[in-house]
Length: 437
Image (cartoon, rainbow, N blue to C red):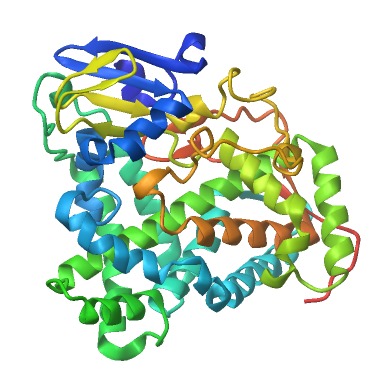
């Protein structure tokens, strides 16, 4: 319990990584670990109606930040809002946002090009500013200033540090857990994030956003909805959810991707060779994706090894039976991509960085690889996030190599999302090949 409150992925034993089912108790609460594709399917698809609720820990940890946003809502609220959100982030809209991704990545590339040769950056912050710029423009039709992007990054980092993602009350018998009141530092972190998001939402509602932005589409879809329209608070909660999910998860994915290819130079060489062959001296574009296979595979393999949301806890609405285990009402049913993606029963060399496993043509079981969840609650922004990460990696890798600080110990830590503990300091090295903007 002490370990889990510090880092939710630190307490697993070797046995937990093996495919199968397990059940144990923490005080008055049954915990069921589901680490087999067959039973993952049962929980998230076959019996979705019984296991759709996110765990009280996750709901309580995020409700102060996201309200009743799609990520933590359920029941009628989720059913009503899911079609609205899914439509505006659907993959058919990706070409509309591709130029935004390109411009933001090229802006970071221009900043990196001005750095002294020995300058050190912190990758989680750099990638956070990049993805904040992209998602703010895509969601609100309005770019946010660098200082505002940094405020969101700092606010969410502080929020993760000071929020209770364990929720002792749930394990003591409170089926809805205890409210996560937090202290002054947590309240300040919430205020930092809300100030920026409320500012851009209010600007949009005042007519300063762009037509065609996600918020504009959300408002127009909402107005056409046959059910009760969302009020301003609900619209802000959904905008905040899209913003935080789109910014944080892609930023952490890119951070881990740089770490992995820096420690696998043969993979970095493949990536550079592919970009040079496909794009030459011009910048990669969304239209190049069919040929940027290695870049995409690097992101897919990064998501396997370091899924940004490594735990997908659900709460049983009613008693059920998963395989040989009788599940109690309100039990915690834990599906953990962190375990599932590293199971030796499901993956060849599960702890190795092997992007080519996504190039070989071998079928990947959709219930064994779930970085964006799976089933009815699969992340509606999956294609947006995957393409965003791939394009940003390609544009920056074309111009630079990223070298983590020598001797720096990188420890993955999860409180809400999976981050390197203390960040990831690195040096940017310009590639010798000339590149045109």
